[in-house]
Image (cartoon, rainbow, N blue to C red):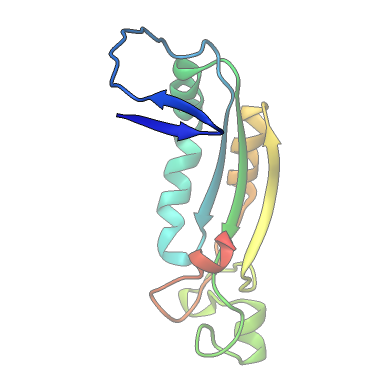
Length: 143
C-alpha cells in the first residue's frame, strides 16, 4: 500500500496529534469604513459620528494595534442616476431645501490612521449628497 514518489516508496497512513493555539496578542487590524453618503443615509452618518468613540473602544478591546480609514460614495454622476440640470448638479439636495455636495462616484477621505479623533472629524465634515435611484454605487466604490 505504498506510493512511489521520486523513486521512493512512501507509505501514507492517517495520524492523529493534539495541539493548542491562542490568538496573537495585539494583532494588526485595519478598518476602512466605506460609507454611503446619500441623503437617505444622513442619519446613519450622524449616528456613526456619535458612536465614533465607542467604535474605537470596541476595536481597542480586540487589539491595541488598530487603525481606521474612511471613504464615501454616492452614485455615478450621470443620468439616470442623478438629475442633469445644472442647478441640480451643483446642489442635488435643492428639493430638500438643503445644500449638499455635488454627486460623485467615490471619495477617499482619510488614509488609514491611528488617530481616532481625525476619523471622527472626517465623518463630521463629510457632507451628504443625493441621487435619483435607490441602488447607490457601492460596488463601483469598492472597485
